[in-house]
Length: 155
Image 1 (spheres, rainbow, N blue to C red):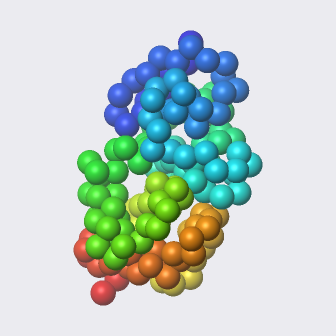
Image 2 (cartoon, rainbow, N blue to C red):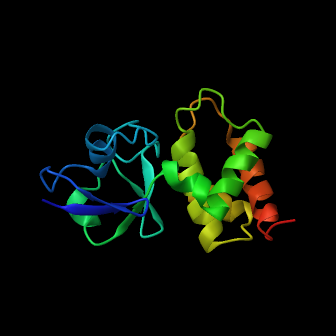
């Protein structure tokens, strides 16, 4: 039975090791903040962090996460950078339908942790795999810049 470290807690999961992290989070553990979008790692709605790196949980099996740390949208309120991203998202009214926003926030947070002063190209590159069907890309970029400034980055 695999043991997974998720948001600082250990979880024993009685699932086949090829089960995607997404379904483990949602169906086994009740963490529904991570969304199913395409199932093919193309849209980014299912983005979580694995040892700090953004990954697509819809195609990543739980076997790849054993011995590593999974961080989900549920933990972002306790993360300094994640919280600043969420605050910027709300201040600028980024979400419309909101479906993709957990994945967007997870990708943006990972970017700001590795690149606290991102250029427009850095933002475009980091966010390119996250699709927003409502087209809030301009507000997403502005929110990332606001969160970076709040954390001492972009002014």
